[in-house]
Amino acid sequence: MKRQWISFISIAMPILLTIASTQAARSQELTPTAHRVTFYIDKTTGQVFMRPGPNRTPFRIIGEVDTEAIGRQVEKRVEQTTDEKVRAAVAQSQMQQRANYQVLNQKVSAMEPAWHGYINNFQHEFRLGALAYLDYAYYPHTGYGPYFLENLNIPGVGNNGYNSFDVNRVYLNAYFTPTDDIIFRLTPELYRAVGTAGPDKLGTKTAAASNFDGQLNVRVKYAFLQWAGRFADSPQLKGGALTFGAQPNPFVTWEEDFTEFRYVYLSPWNYLGLSSGQIGLQLSGPIKGQAGEATYAEYSVGVFDNGNFNNGEQANTKQAMCRVSLYPFGAHWRYDGLGFTGFYDYGYGNVAPDSNSLPVPLKGNNAHFDRIAALVHYAAEQWNVLGEFDYGDNAFSLASLYRGSGPDDAFGIPTGTPFDSGTHFGNTCTKSTPCYNLVGTYGPQVAAYQAFLNNGRTRQIGFDFLGRYHIPATKLTLFGMFQWFMPNDNVPEDPLDFRRFVAGISYQPNPYVRIAIDSQNLLFYHSNFGLPVSSLTPFNYVPGGKFNGQLLPGNSKRSGSLGTFIPNIVPRDTHAIFLNLEFAY
View (cartoon, rainbow, N blue to C red):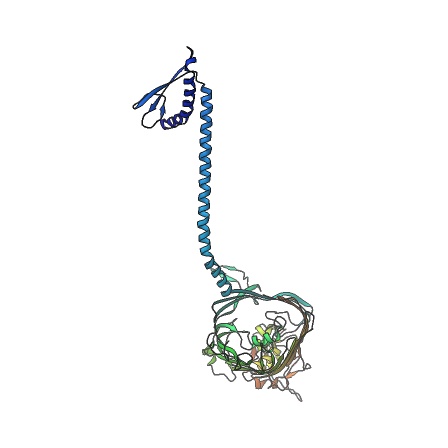
């Protein structure tokens, strides 16, 4: 408080001295009523005080003192001093802010090259893409057989007019490239789960219902690491890559890229059960001319699990695949011009070693298999065409036939009304061992198909033609494919021989979206007939044997008869109209 008072007096001192000098000039005019005011000045500091003290010299001001004027002068001086201090503080703050901004700007400028470098490197090293297949399908005529597109498991015979909107496949593609010759790819896939599950047991007296009811699930389609630096120094082999992990099939993906209509239909061997994704090790790449410009050959060689991306490996063996494409006139882009392609696949059934070693007359699904494809193809900018010959051993099983949907009998559930008494088709039927009827059931037919396809001695032959034509100056493309296939050429008249054809037109409004309308059909082309049981015995069919807990028809002969016939042995056809949509980014 004392310091504040002294500061106040020091501010008021100049004003008082001014008043004092004025009063001194008027000292001769003083009247007896004049006032005397005494102050005390510190000799050392020059400060003015109201009271005496050490080192203070008094001085007097004689005259009338206008205290109000003094107050106004003091107040004005205080305001001026305060304003000056505020302005000085503001100016100092602004100067400090400018200095801080300059320092910050220098730091940001120093950081920018590193930041831009990080962003540029991130954009170069990491890339995301998306691929979606959506469709609407109407089935004027339904039957059993392989699906037209993955996971389209439709109701079979007796469900004409069935239709559905489907999220067929959705992929999110992530690519990471830490160096120019290393690529890591991860592709999760959204797909429709099929099947039912029993209740989940919780303790000894509690259970919860299963939520496995055909919902959309996520699984990994591709997850691989690829090294493309092995032949980087060779102009003729540059582009070769070594790939390890879950990766595209060497042949199926190649053919899908050639057709350009993977979102509409499956390629021939893929339709027959060869997976589009394998898990293993693969070496692939081009072989170019001396100048390293045109490609004259392309190869892909790999060793893979007998399983694939959607089922695990059980066998102690592996399958080998090899594809070679030749371009005699040189290709300046993939598939350019005339080409010849060959594919070979050899492996064994995906069963555990202890099961595969059991001695059985016919190996069935445990037997070895091979697939062969020989192709002639030509690709131009606006059109392409491909012809294919297919050959296989044990490459098409009952599971392949009913990959889309099949009768209950194909999945362990007998259909129809069985005989539970008397003698029928050479069998004695009881309630404990009922017999399959030949009417209102698919059991004997499924057992016949199983004998034809799962005996371990089947031979497959097929021919395929496919192509596309882009209509010039439009966004429209015509496309089609035809497949003729014999599941077992060793059967004199195989009821499962079929033809498949697809025809349609697509519209592409922009680089990311394509829309197609098309007709897809599966036709078992033999006229329906009855199959003698005697013709099935060479293929491991056991007359009177058990199937799904019931007895199969035996070879009961009557006078002048060839024996028991299994009626309606040719499956029903399937016809569908599709509206397909592809989004690719």
